[in-house]
Image (cartoon, rainbow, N blue to C red; front, side, top):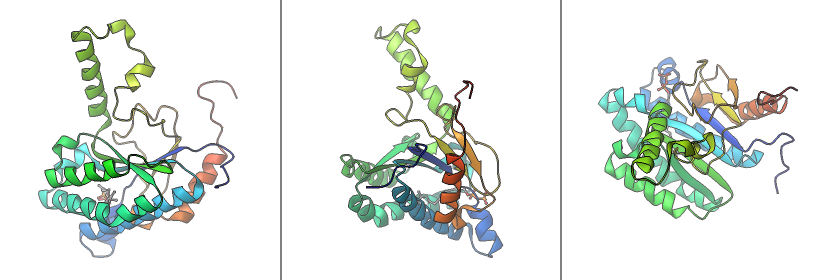
Length: 238
Ligand code: FPP
């Protein structure tokens, strides 16, 4: 059994940034940076398991990333399928459930098929949850949720007055997933970039200059230790 952290950290979310710059600094192609980024994903999943963090959400491909050159998008999709193939055994061995958030309908069919197979295969696993945000944008997610609720009203299954913050959250892609306690962004950028805007209302934020491919367990521990020292007041007095 893992020793529980003094301050509960159930859900860590990460904006993995800096793959391109990491590659550029080494005279490598951007895809090499993404490949090294996939290794950092493996280390982070392992680190979360060791620290007893149950949910890990990774911003793997944003809605805005569709605007990148077609070749880079293709390579990222390929890398994702490779990751699913290579990490399947780990997820199985450690009984980690895979979930996705985002508009998967835009992904190539082969990627979607591999994802749904991996999600289905892991649906009973209860040791941890890895959430991949793919083709994800928070504003788009909120609009999708609003549409779902509007349909319920149009079909007479709900009244406008029924809408509360709690049941609105049930229409989001993240239904069933607790809000993130801590959000990490790498590479020195200090913004949320359309990531979990609703869910991040009370999340603690932690930024590092480290580029994502260099992110490792030591730095994860540093972020978690910092989180342990924060006072979370949720708008109340300390
Ligand atoms: C941001 O770096 C990163 C991405 C757009 C993709 C993230 C993908 C991975 C870490 C690898 C694959 C993921 C999985 C789950 C297998 P950037 O390209 O924006 O870097 P830059 O800002 O330095 O250009």
